[in-house]
Image (cartoon, rainbow, N blue to C red; front, side):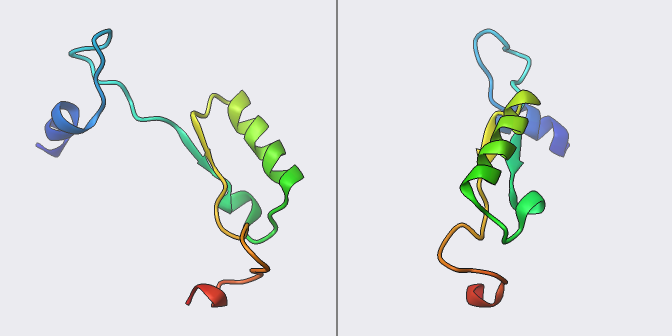
Length: 75
């Protein structure tokens, strides 16, 4: 039942793919690769690797603001 709802109401459709739904974009989130060790060169390298794999969206996640070194400032 849920699968049918997703197919008919959530997944994107286009004229070219109707009635076949368009799958959602593939997203790469950098958190697992970098945690708090975020720097520009590392993020660029990860984004390039993700793009080479066909990832649609790259998310630079956490650690990129200020001097955050652990999760205590988020509390």
